[in-house]
Image 1 (cartoon, helix red, strand yellow):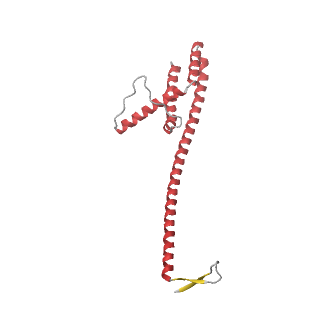
Image 2: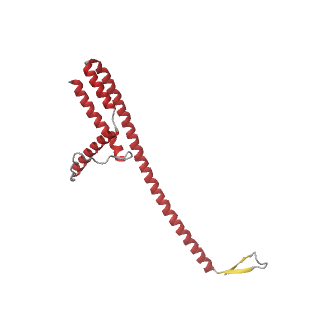
Image 3: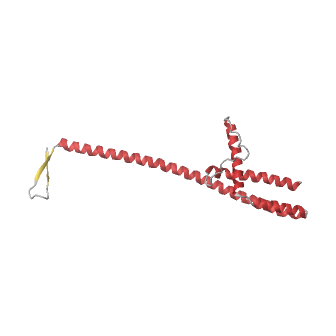
Length: 186
C-alpha cells in the first residue's frame, strides 16, 4: 500500500488520500477499456470513411471516363460534320440549279434539329437498344406504345441519355450519311 498526498486549495492542511493497488489497477483497467472502446469506434469510423473514399474515387473515375468518351465523340462528330460539309460544297456546283436548291434546303433543314426531335431520336434508339438487350437475355419484351402515345422524355441530366447520346448520334449520322451518299449517287 502506498500513500499519495494531494494538496487541497481550500484548506491549509494536507490530508492524505489513500489508494490501494487494487483500486489503482481497477481505475487503470477502466480507463484502458474506455480508451480501447474509443479506439474501436474511431477505427470503425476510419474504415467507413476509407470505403466511402474509395467509392467516391470509383465514381469519379467512372464519370471522368464518361466525360472523356463524350468529349472524344463530340470532336469526332464535329470532324465528320466538317468533312461532310466539305463534300457537299465540292459536289454542289456540279448539280443542276434545281437540285442545288433542293440540296441547300435539305442542308438547312438538317441544321435545324429541335429538342423534341432529339428526344424522339434518343427515345427510338433507347427502345431499340433496350429491345436488343432484352432479346439477348431471353426476357419478354414490351409491346410498342399505341400511336399517339409516347414514352416520357428523358430529363436533361439523365446518365442513360448522356451515355447513349453519342452512340445514337453516331448511328443516326451514319444512316444520314448513307442516305445522302445514295441521293448523290442517283
